Structures are given as C-alpha cells and as structure tokens.
Length: 262
Image (cartoon, rainbow, N blue to C red; front, side, top):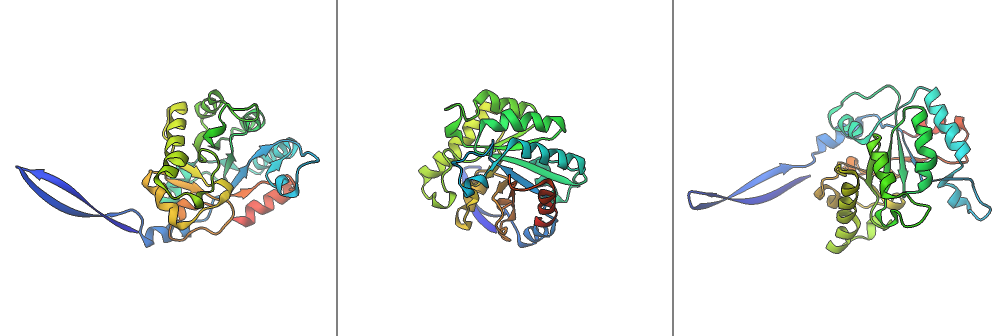
C-alpha cells in the first residue's frame, strides 16, 4: 500500500511544495510475511471452574484452573518457549530468529483471575504473556484487575496491550469520536499506568474488517491480533491469528491443535 503526502518546506522566505512517496506496506513485504511459518498463539479469557449456568458457547471462553495448569505444564514439558510481540514483529518483518518451539500466551478482557491464577502459574515455568486490557473495567468490580495489578504484570516483563475501551465491535467503529474513545484514550490510559508505549491491539470478539485497519496503522500499532480467521494477505501484521485454548481439550488435544492449526 502506497500513501502520498505533501508537506511545506520554507527556505529563504520561499515556500516549496514537495511530494513524497512513503511506502508503508508493499506486496513483496506482505508476501514475505505470509510466507513465514506462523507462530502458535493461544488466547485465554476467564480462568475459572464452569458453572451450571454457563452455556456451551460460554465454556469455549472459560478454561478451568486445573486444565489451564495442566496445559501450561505440558507446554513446558514439550520444550515450548514463550515469546512476546516485539519478537514476533521482528521475526515477521525481518526474519529475526526465534527460540526453539516458540509460542505466545495472550489474555483478553482484564479478568482478575488472569492475575491470580495465570500469573503465578506462568512464573513457575519462566513464561511471559500479553494482556489485552479493556480500560472501562480497570478496578471497577472485584472480577477485574486494578491499575496496580496491570502495572505489576508490566513490571514483571509481560506486555500490556489494548483491547478497546469497552469491548466494542471494531467493524462498527466509524467516526473520529469512536476512534478517540476506543483507541486513543485507552492507549493513553495504559501508557500512564505502565510508563511504556502501547504498540499492540486485539480485536474484541476477534472481529475485524479491512476498511478499518488503516486506523491501527495511523496510530502506530505494530501488530493486531484476531482469532482463527484467515489472515488478510494485504495486511498480515494487523490480522495475526490466535486460537482459543479450550477447557474441553486434553493436553494431547491442545498439543495437536498447536501443531496443526499454524
């Protein structure tokens, strides 16, 4: 994709208009990215025991703590090494080598059980993760993480990233006010909490559309994460794939999915 922009340069009282061509993305770059082997990326939401009131669909997004712990142990036993988004970006764009058997662990929606259960379990194995925060929920009720917990995750080497303000459908955002509320303000809030730039984004519900992807580029996001849909060959950095780690899966089923889904 090639974008043109003009800027005005004043020299010795004269004003000269210069047209510059900036190459943000090129077909060859995108083809190279699409050609690299995908890194397995797991997505988690709630980590708690199922309740009788949980629907089948809800259970797809809820993994019981015993299953989560077993799955992480399996990953460690199998020799997987967690990577973070900066490493993935460098691998995709420059071919920078990754550790053997790389995997990424991602957590959506700011649930406090991610801090209480996932964090200590990950520390057992030296794993790091990416936490996609919807800022409307920070410290609001007991089920969500506080600003202090989010900062602690960041200070411990995990990555804090954006998941909009209130989990709005990315495809339905259209106005300047929408982008300010759902992207700009959350970015500012998370940067204030962590003291670090926010460069990564996850689509609520995993839903995205090509027309709105330029809004992410405009704001300097380096990667955006969906769920299991096919990547956009014209913008693979903004449509990185993940799979849900299901509580229905045994260790063997998860390993099989990791080996064959990417």
